[in-house]
Amino acid sequence: DIQMTQSPSTLSASVGDRVTITCRASQSISSWLAWYQQKPGKAPKLLIYKASSLETGVPSRFSGSGSGTEFTLTISSLQPDDFATYYCQQYNSYRTFGQGTKVEIK
Amino acid sequence: EVQLVESGGGLVQPGRSLRLSCAASGFTFDDYAMHWVRQAPGKGLEWVSGISWNSGSIGYADSVKGRFTISRDNAKNSLYLQMNSLRAEDTALYYCAKTVGSSGKYPFDYWGQGTLVTVSS
Image (tube, rainbow over all chains, first blue to last red; front, side):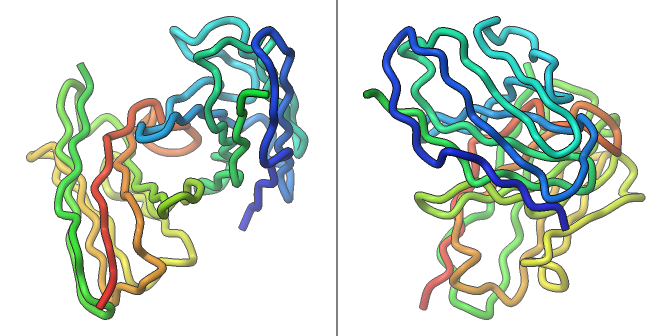
């Protein structure tokens, strides 16, 4: 089974900050990686697919990069609406989620 | 508008069974693979099971293999999860999720709001 490891688990940041979250796969998943945002009491929302493709309607301050086993999600300028928990997901073989990164207000 | 509405959750004793349903609308259901994802209270997301558009390809997480069975009825636009031999660690909010494609390598583009399963004596 493919394991996904996200870091950090929690991130404290201020509005306007550049934020980077890392996701590492236990084996190569090519670019079959997605990023989701989840707010309390809500279902997850797809942000990025195929490692770097922005889902329709998602603000351009979100970007993804990486391939193989190392991936990053970057928020170029953190906005108040972005405080949430972010999950990576591999879909190369079945599905596996990372443990999540909570972005909180500093 | 795509809608996924889960039902069937509730309080159940350890060792008993429960069947979850997901009613889909707003898209051509039999064009897409579907999945179940769960989230224990205060915890992260865990993929549970997935099924291709024609039920020809099915997968399960190791944690539920042999106890849970996924199925779909394309005529009824519905997805199901039969959960047997339930354990306390199966307590979670269960989400139904739609993929972008019919089978294979696609992320989830729509999610339901979830149905809560609580396993406790």
